[in-house]
Length: 374
Image (cartoon, rainbow, N blue to C red; front, side):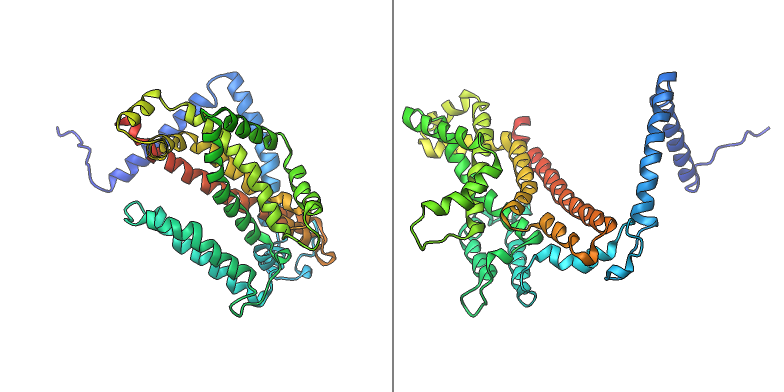
């Protein structure tokens, strides 16, 4: 009598794999969600809460929402999600009040920034150090010339018309690129062996860290012009950027100071044994390791800065959230559905960029900490 032999034909592999995966899911559900009467009760309660919140959200966001059109009449139900509002005001959300005929300058400036920074993300690009002067010195001059104009035949665009996501990006990039070098100097100064320098840096850091961001902005916008010579005016956006730079440099200086304290003493002694001077020892041996340790905190501070650009609304500068709020107050679009959809759009935009930044930071942290496993 011949016994049936199980065949290992290619067509049986997907069925077997699917059956194994299904059994594994059932086993996980049974062990983690329904393993005891308490877990059963908690699972049912959580399922009920998800059902009463998720189902109405899907109905409001997708099923009952309005998708086509670009006018207020395309959203007759004022409580449902109104995506025509986003489509109609999308350019305003991106560029603010920047003149329509001059927006090519913003696109060109951002395109050049992407072109110059893209090689830095390529692991085997051989000339990364040569790009740093281009990014730190040359590109800011190009960006200011493009965005502001007033020379080389370009029309002048006042910074009061800058807004939307464009203003958010300009603020975040400017503050990060200027505050990080100051943070390094403050952190080194606070750990200096010179008492006067150490006290001055510590006082400066504690002073600015103890003041709310809104107070600093109001001082920069309202009080600072009172101490300037008569007839001399400073751009409002520039004053706000400098104020945010002062705050962010102090926050990151503390993160770097804590990272410097975590570097083993043997690293300092080994660098001294090699005959390296203070600055060469600091920037070639100590600081790269400290930045690796402080990278999560630096990223957290930058994400906080990216979201805190919304405080510019207080001083009359409209970033992405400010433009959404301004558009939602238009009488033609004044409705619960349109405003809620606008705020949701802004939240998703901020989440997308902040989450991408956190993932890239985790990648850099993992890559730069490989020396610890050597």
